[in-house]
Amino acid sequence: MPGFTPGRRWQPPFYPFKNEPIGSRLLESIERAVKGPMFGCRMCGNCLLQETAFICPMECPKGARNGPCGGSTQEHCYVDETRPCIWYKIYERSFKMGREEILLEVLPPLDWDKVGTETWGDVVQQIKKVGVRYFIGGMASRDPAQRAIVWDSVFRPVRQPEWWQGDSKYHAPSYTEPVSELERRLKAGEFVVTAEVAPPLTTSTKKLIENIKMVKPYVASINFTDAPSATPRMSSWACSKIAIENGAEPVMQIASRDRTRTGLQGEVLGANALGVRNILCLSGDNMIMAPQPRGRMDILDLDSIQMLWILRRMRDEQRYLDGRAIKFPPKFFLGAAASPFASEPKFQAIREHKKVNAGAQFFQTNLVFDPEGMDEWLNELAKRNILDKVYILIGITPLKTLKMAQYMDKEVPGVCIPEKVLKRMEAAGDRAEEEGVQIALEIIEKIKGKQGIHGIHIMAVGWEEIVPRIVTEAGLLSKTTPGEKVPQPS
Ligand code: SF4
Image: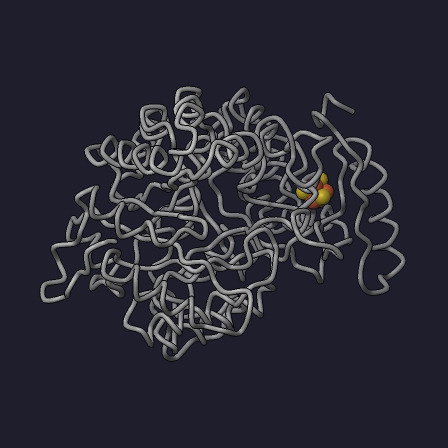
């Protein structure tokens, strides 16, 4: 049924967890029989077709309900390369229909009490609530604005349950004093540097501590990844705690891949009590990249935008997802990933805008090798008026070999390496490492002056020793930590 769902593939429907009364079962069967062939309905129990240009987002193998994940491209889905990413199809059609701004509404995770059950009953109940005559009269109106109001009065309460109340608005943080050193430096207008240190594969923390101590004087904060490539390593919160014990400030990365809503809320409270203030919310690399045997690759309990929404409300509204009050709420500086080159800049800008609205205060971007090519994305963010609401740190990596450059260009979603960079790496021969460092320094020089860019995030991929040299030679040593002795890079 390509007219309804471009690139349609069959996804199995859900069935209710509990035995339902006969009337409900009958209605479910009718809804499944009608919406299944038309939209590929999976019976998620919380229909979003109005917001997604009438393409069911549950066609996404991961069930992402707020936009594409970081791994997909406009060409294909990342979990199943034989199908297109349904979210880019939703973006394309939304732009064609002029409905793209509707995509900004932060949509709730599935309510598993309702999964598999029908949605039509909820719609009928809501029509009764607003008044059948009001609904029919409104929908018959010639005024499109009036029709939209009446439509929304029925469908908004259905898709936005009491416990979620998502919207399309920006919610400024409820606090003013910075909660972390990273936030303090960004607010002070410093061009900041953060860097990634790889968590160890064993219980030995010797190398981890050495790397933390080596990198610490050169950066505002250190990121600890959360099982990249869906491959187990020491947890991000444990590395974050070790960083704090060694006088460094961590950015704890959390991948929704491994979190349930219960686990997420418990983990961030614990991490906050241990001193973690910066949290980067990610979807995480899919299980498709994991070593075998692989875990579930499909439906996620939460996506990264829902994680931001939940954490922001825990901090600013002092409540859990279920509405319970948090007497001593956590303090977070919340971050998210951004990807300037993953697809058309106007599509990516919608995704970044939604993250800012949900609670992202800083972005750490995917790797950038084409600083000039990034301008279109920045312009789209500027049009959306979000550049003054989020700090942007550009992802930088020093290439080590031509092979690494080719791999990243071909295999890593959202990373584009211009031909001229590949040629330079090829021509460098056994000087490739040095050439990679020079390329990174040139990129940093070009982005330093760009409006809307507030720093860099160095992802050295196991080459942490290079961080001090890059920061020093790029002229980015912090001037806001007087008294700290900065060792010279070797
Ligand atoms: S959003 Fe949910 S209810 Fe709506 S068509 Fe898709 S699976 Fe069915």
